[in-house]
Image 1 (spheres, rainbow, N blue to C red):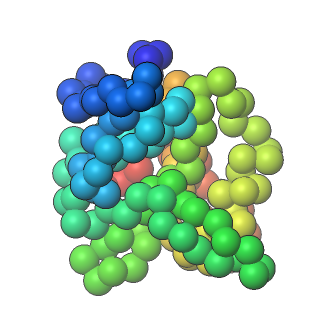
Image 2 (tube, one colour):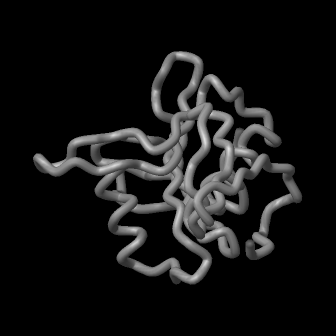
Image 3 (cartoon, helix red, strand yellow):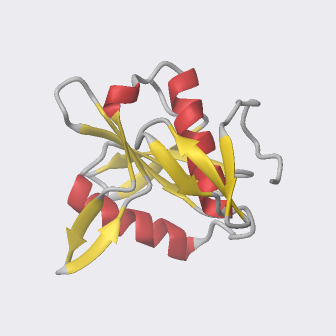
Length: 144
């Protein structure tokens, strides 16, 4: 797999039926290794590396938006169970553009996170939502 713009992490892999699977420490199961999953697993490891408890991370959970079933990539909850960070992961070949920001914003209307991260594994964008001005304040890093 492609080297991403994250620290080096160790992962557990398994090959089955000519397909590669990666073990997800949050979901506690093997997941088919796609380009997007490679990014998602790096994000999870990065959050844990930065001090986020595994018990405060959710991965690929269903949400309903305008009567449509969607799945967010990664969410971090605070100790009170409130969404603190919403992460949207894309495959490395996907450019981070306005469409990706719009998708993340739509998800966030349901989740109401204070901070957002968008990444394709190569480029990372961190920002804080300013609800008063309905704008984003870009940050160098997510303040954990």
